[in-house]
Image 1 (cartoon, rainbow, N blue to C red):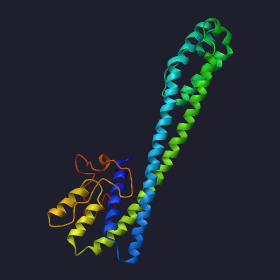
Image 2: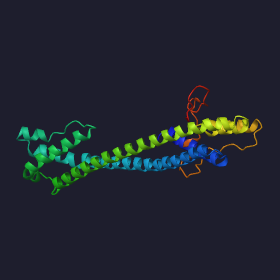
Image 3: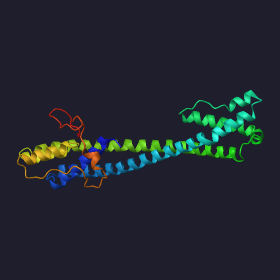
Image 4: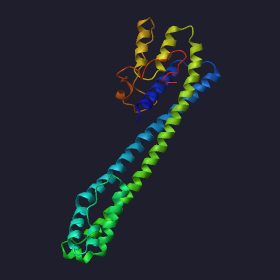
Amino acid sequence: MNRMLTRKLAMAARTLEFLRAHPFTDRNQATVATQFEAQLAAAESLFLAEHKDRLAAVAAQRHGADLRRGLEAHLLPSMERIGAFATRSDAQVASRFATPPRSKSQAAFVTRAASLLEVARAHQDALTRNGLARGHITELANGLAQFRDATTQAQVRRQHHHDTRTKLERSLAELIELLRLLDAYNRVRFQRDAGLLTRWTAVRTVGRVAAARARRGSEEGSELPPVPVANSPTGTPVAPSEIAPASAHGHDDEPPREGRPSAAA
């Protein structure tokens, strides 16, 4: 999961907590805050779905890789060697049992295995007389069918994960648009309260800078406690290690400057 997406979700959760502690008195502004809360809930739901879909896609890919390794380690080499020996008197047939160069391509692997299965079936008697185990051809056919099915499932799950990830990114973009509007409201609302304005600026900043700004505001005389950075009040399972670390060079979480878009908005 992209770390910046995780940090944005954590920032949005801090923002909601702040808005609950400092609700708007203007009805229209309060409506936007309600929309923000609903959009955050939708984004958090998509966050969980994306995580689940990503794990499923990885598991499907690993299952296919395990099936392929099993075929390449045992069934295919044995059939190639026995077949080449059994048909050595016919160079044209024997060449079809020759071990081809290894390829990472799934399509190349399926083509190789299917071709070997075809020629083995055509010369099954000769292979059996030369020691091919009973059921070897059937086992290879079943293994190849399982691999093809696993490959298809992996492709489906990758596409499903991609679609969910796209929905999550779109949902977060809409969340940030609402945050920009809320920021405009609060800059006017807190223009005569430096402590709350500092607190709000810290809350809506992505990453560790939020906590640093809150501490500075407290040291400068604000009686409000620092803003918590880690836990989402709406239940997003965001690991602190995903939220707190800043870039080694300090660029990812630099506070926004006037006239420049911030990392959060």
